[in-house]
Image (tube, rainbow, N blue to C red; front, side, top):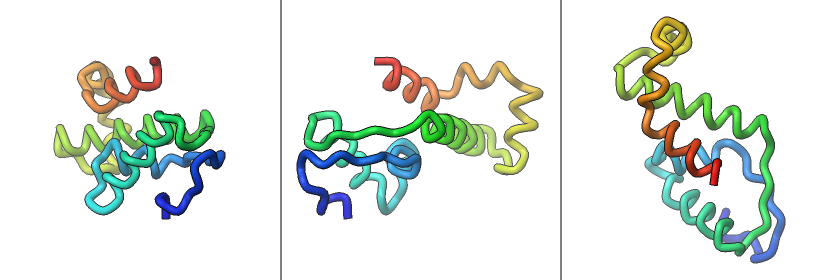
Length: 102
């Protein structure tokens, strides 16, 4: 899978790779984290898109609100519209923003 990619290969990183790492997926989280670390070290050349970044931000925010406030996923967007201030306190979203801002 990700271990089979030849060093120096240019790869497109889709949202699931980021999300598995950020949300600590039980099966793929560690391999995706290692892959992204390899990308940061220059083992692979990578790119992604604004749409992928948007999806990662959105899904990370939804997942954190579900976990932190015990809200059904289908209700999160309306909950956030009524409680916008809680977005500032989302730790995973803040961490993601800081990483991408570097």
